[in-house]
Length: 427
Ligand code: EPZ
Image (cartoon, rainbow, N blue to C red; front, side, top):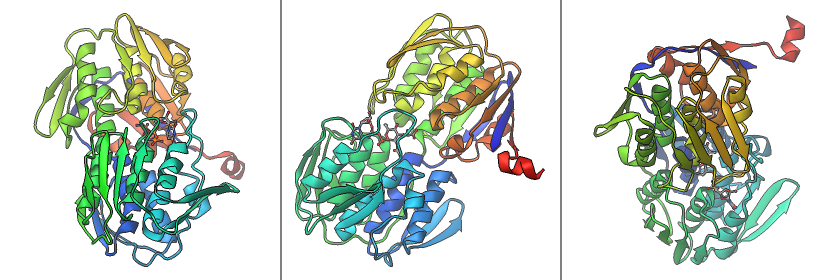
């Protein structure tokens, strides 16, 4: 298995350019199926979730051309069978977006149940509620979700909880339904707006994305388009925190500052300097880092996907910080790993109490999930000594060229291949 080896204690300095947003592109790629013509997608990050999404389209019969520089031309018009290969779908939670897009195009979809994730319960009841509201029959059989509808009729959908995935799936299923769909209590994340903009550029009629009420007038067909994915707000936030944790001086480029507002506000409260420009932010730290309280919320609140990273920073702040994870019920699995590095954190349910410590120390740790893995990278960069991170495949799901980007900022980080158990025998 591969690992990252980080020699910490170096200040990050220089510039880093943010890639396309993972949580936007994993919705836009399946959405291409809704088009009656080929589409060109730009600013696609080179991450494993994208590779799996593109592979699913290819296995289903689409033509996928890599035009280079993060641009792909996808022609999904040859897809006839609305079934997603089990082996591929089960590796990626976002494969459930193929449910909404295949139902929207073919009135039928058969996709593997999304894997349970390391963040706690990940039900899909609200997704199925949306599909049923539009007239679909939803069944589960031997690990697959099977949905079908004679017709999809526009409807009123009210989500019992704010959910990004179900909001996206409802949009995908409704965009070619007959009549008006109104989604209430919708999620407002930037990647939902990006998907709506992508679909509207194909001739869809979606209004209100980014607010909690989204109205969709179904259309009969969607044309091809050329579309660029927005920058990744969580990748940007991760580098902002890494710069602060190493007391560096970093210009984070290709960002939309408005998408970073809640992250910027919290960093400034902790004592980090954040200088905003049109499409970049500069991070420096002069004085001490100080404690604060954080509560994760749906957008525009503080994003749950930044909770492990900011908690790591608070380990280095003076005083006692309180972090409340209000979105997922098990998103503190990284705390045991940080403790190995000298962190002083206690967790009770959804609340972590973080006692600031002067410094962290390098240690061998294991990434439990994507954002927790990113937090361990930040901890390794700030720690004195060497940190080895296992299971880095989690991290490579969502961070394009993370080793190259960090090395360009002066970090001492390398990726090492370690022979697996089987290979070890061969050696
Ligand atoms: C998306 O997951 C993101 N994944 C997650 O990012 C992100 O953490 C999450 O939204 C919240 O922002 C992608 O976009 C691929 P939810 P999703 O549905 O859609 C409950 C990352 O690190 N819920 O908004 O699965 C659910 O249990 C990943 O990039 C239901 O109860 O999240 C959770 O408590 C991790 N019923 C809350 O809603 C449902 O049917 C929010 O989940 C659906 C969700």
